[in-house]
Image (cartoon, rainbow, N blue to C red; front, side):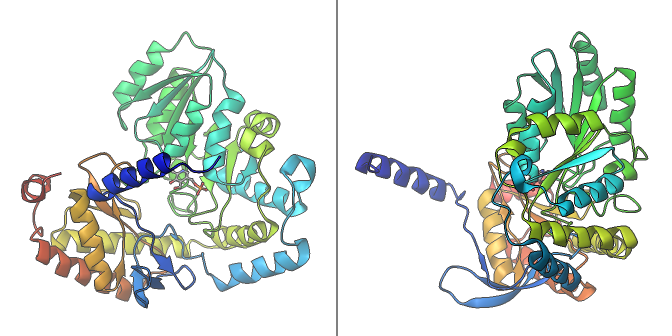
Length: 415
Ligand SMILES: Cc1ncc(COP(=O)(O)O)c(C=O)c1O
């Protein structure tokens, strides 16, 4: 049926409402490989200009690493472009299994299953292992893909206040009558950059006979002394029941994700997880690139160490400049504006100064919590950070918010 005039009008007015509320998301077009220095066109048709990228998930700077690119080329030559199949029909190559074994070793688990993305891993894992006799108890700030995965699962859903261990304990007591209890958290919370208290969560799980799930998408490769994730950082490496993570951020940044954990859970995902059963295999070229990434990450901590140095340097600089940042220890450093339009305007002015960063606002973050989420990379040199810092200082001065806290910024700009 044709797209009716009434429907078209309805959506045009919806889009206008989003625009008027200052909540319209515009894509910037990048004309270069992903890196610390990129070439960006924004707005469309305005020409391409150079910018420092301060908002990629390219934590280890491996997205355009020459060795990864060479390995991907070699994989393309030796294993072809596409598999034209899901995994269980004819989409599993030797290199898929090899990558799963590397990830298992790196994450300190028993087995791993690749998915087309971590969004798919999260969408499939809960339904594959739990049913209506069970309960999922999730931190209130888990990633949207986990929320969607929980919606697809018949187990009861409950939540605990963000990182509130007392509240989690109450919930575990309340649900002692269920067959299985699964505690669900992000390792690093993607919008705020804070780390889950995984050691305390594991201790509570042991006390109340529960299982622990952590999405390590924003930690795999760089959090912990050897970059294995928040479980390494918190001293509970090897104790996780289920980890999901992505190849789309630190691990080369292309695409693909996985579920990793206790052998039986992985086998259940292989048998039952719908995004695994009904979506195409990760392309061989990506698997070949990711294998090289794993080799780089497992042979040296040099990149993860540089990232840590960069993150500390940037946090300190933002505080000295007088910007209102969220405290934390990850390479995610949110600069708070509270007001969505202010965050958007600030990002636009930063771009005029040659710095690429994006304003985040509702529904990506709660209303009244608009921010620019800066993200550090091992690809940044100190020079990048100094230039970007100066741009933040200049634009911050223009808006009169340097040295101001939440209350004052909201008084000036509202939410
Ligand atoms: C915490 C978290 N989990 C999962 C995902 C989804 O990862 P992917 O891009 O592999 O689907 C993201 C991506 O934004 C994320 O931040």
